[in-house]
Structure formats: C-alpha cells, structure tokens
View 1 (cartoon, rainbow, N blue to C red):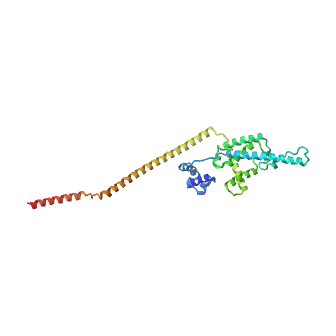
View 2: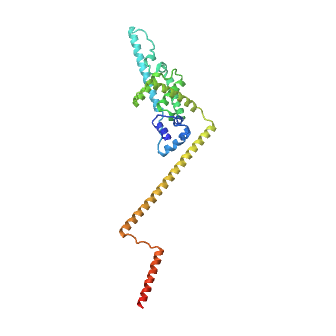
View 3: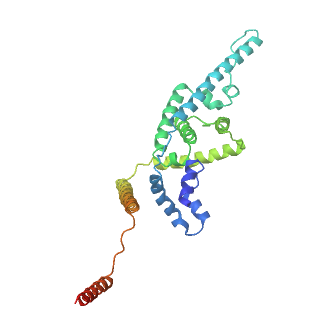
Length: 300
C-alpha cells in the first residue's frame, strides 16, 4: 500500500520522498525507505506502466523567447523615450542612452543591456546545463519548467551576465504555471519554493557535472545489470505463473465439460443399476442353489 502511495505521488507531481513516507508510516513499516524503492520498479512493471520523462529543452526555448521579446520591447521603449526627450529639447542634441532597467523591468537592466553575443553564449551554456541536469535525478524530482529555469540561470552565470534571472521574471513564470493549472496559491510562496528548488537543482547539476571514476562507472554498470536481471527474472516468473494459471483453467474447463456430458447422459438413460457387494452376490448364489436343491427334491 505504501509503495502504491509513493508511486501515485510521483504520478500526480506531488512528490514525497521515500524516507519521509516511511517515517510517517512508522518504524520498520514496509521495510523502510529501501523497501519502498525496491518494490517501486516491480509495481510499475506489474501495472504495465510506461514512465514518461519530459525534457526541459522546450521550456528553456520558451523562456529565452520571453527574454528576446522583452529585449525588443525595451529597445522600442528606449527609442520612444529618447525621441520624447529630444522633442522636448526642440530637437536638440542626442539624448541619454535610455535605461533598459525602466524599459524592461521583467528581465532587469543587466539582461536587457547585455550584448547579443553574450546572450548567445548564455543560451548555449544553458542548453549544456540542461543536458548535465538530465544526467542526474532532476527529471524525476522536478518538473521541466523548474529544470529549465535552473539551467537558464546557470547559463547566464557562466556567460557573465550579472544579476541572473530577476525576481519579476520568476514571478511571471509562476503566474503562468498557476494560471494553466488553475491554482490560487500565494505567488510569493510559490516564488520562494521555486528558488529553493533551483538551489537543489544547482546541487544536482554540480554533482552530475563531475565525471565518474572508472571504478564508479563499473559499479554503476553492475547495478544496472543486476536490476535488469531482477526484472527479467520477475518477467519469467510472471510468465510461468500465467502459463500455469492458463493450464489450470483449461483443465478445469475440460473437467466441467466432461461432468456436464455425464450428467446429460445419466438424464437420458435413467439411473444406473445399483452395484452389489461380494456378500450380496454370495448370498444370492446360495439362495439360488437352495432353490435348485428344493426343486430337485420335490421332483423326486
């Protein structure tokens, strides 16, 4: 039952760790966290489920498209501001540079004013960060949008863009997600949770970026082989059980047909004569001999 709850929480994107669920169930229940993790693949296989892990790359492209649109809008507002300023001065000399911070509060001053070459480098770095995160458990623990935001922030940091992702950008991402899901939670709480998730994702990415040693790679390969062997054995056992059940069902069906045929035959032919015991047969023979002797004596 606890394994079913653990799998259902994942399926509904309301993840509860195996350690927390085992602790809530009580000491020693279901074999603890390791017992839950050990039964999870067997339960999924028995239910014939397919696990779909959505990649964060599409969400990342969407966030970069938002940045591009905000930068275009910032340039338009900056030009309008300079034109108004120049018009107020009677068309006099060139105005200010037009601060991108006031023009694009969504992405902040540093991101709005960053050169296109820097943004291209940040975009490439964020795609690489996505690939690194997908080598970790990030795809199983966090939704694609959160993974994409963490990768985007990592790419901006690697490209040297100060400030990274402003809080306004995160608030917009959260508001879109809640609007799609129909939720009404406090945006401030959701943004704080998002920032905590991104910190956890940073830790996962840092660990996944480290190349494993040959010994660790061999150990991981051995674990994978063991898991595959266990699943194959479970499949063979399930197939054997299914074959045994099918054979038993066929035998029961044949026996039922024979019993039904015997019942119809008895109904057509009437009751069978009762079988006599050896004592009854002997008594009948003795009686028959006495009758024969008596008949012979009367004839004399």
